[in-house]
Length: 65
Image 1 (tube, rainbow, N blue to C red):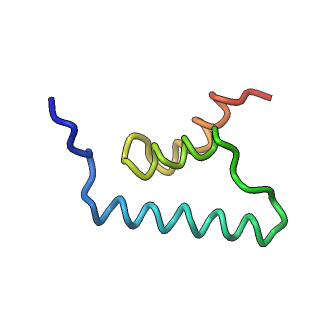
Image 2: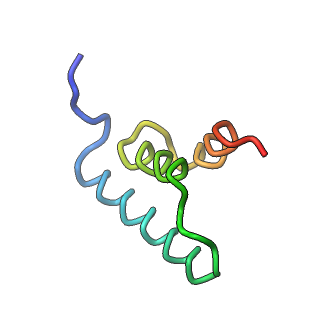
């Protein structure tokens, strides 16, 4: 097994831009910055470990309120 990412560097950069845009939009709306737990989830998405459709599910799994 290698430590190579499951997705390309270009895809990682695209995902990073999506996350940065989403955070900026949230901040404009008055939301607080992401918590460390949320940042971990975003990082997993950027690395290709989870897909966009799994972000909310993963957040709820880690922080059941």
